[in-house]
Length: 372
Image (cartoon, rainbow, N blue to C red; front, side, top):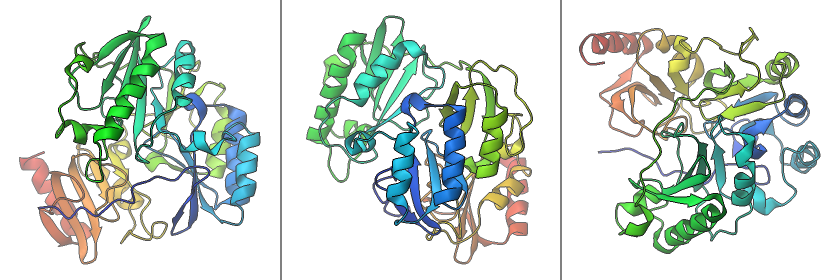
């Protein structure tokens, strides 16, 4: 059984903000997943000028401003365009997201640009492309069409398929168009992701003849993690002032990866010890910023992270916006208290319901000793 609610079916963008409990959310998709220090400073200023001073780093490696009023939205867009953070063409802003692995080098930037401007059929709003280099670093990241550059060749494949096609760079975008057209022909309202369609429709065998790239753990510089992906404008400004490099790469793990700066600095608001318990915890924005959330999430997740060596996911409702895969410890804020789900997703039936925090911690300790 499941209690999974229906998703909205789309995410905010720059030109199409999404209303939340603290105003509108405006999402910024930095080109090639990179930003400079000047651009981060500009974002911090704009968060104060047009929003509530809160900036988020999302699990799609995007930045977003919270608390924007709809009246201020046009002026904010103008400022973002001038800063080189938003393209003037709304069609490019609405194009499928291209998630770029942080270890990608400048030599595949041309491939990224061609992908970004490719004329694709109409696709669901959450349809996405993943671009990697040297191996799969983003195997767990959501995407529908995947590409991995290996030397002078590119492996292109459909998410959910066990093989792909190895092609010259010049042919990669053409094959992406074929995959997108195939999906547009076979997808429907109940099958809005590539992996879902592959389960019910026969996929062309000639498109999955080459092996997929191996997993990689390539490092790309100094890592600064953002707890729960949320920071104030002052924290972001301090980071931009002290980080010491203009090659700042966004990651889907809610981290900044700074190339050319192999050593991290202590900057308030960021975690550089990647073994810190708080980094095992994920949480949505929670109440009161999200109108669908029943309770607060961040402080609770931080407290729970110290109670277990396992990953923790705290959600303000069963939608599970922060994480959509199974987690050893999942906690959902419910109308009658806290629901605990072991090795599941937020929309699964709880193993224990209506707990207070003390009861929840006790259950987690008991489970630690027997299951986790």
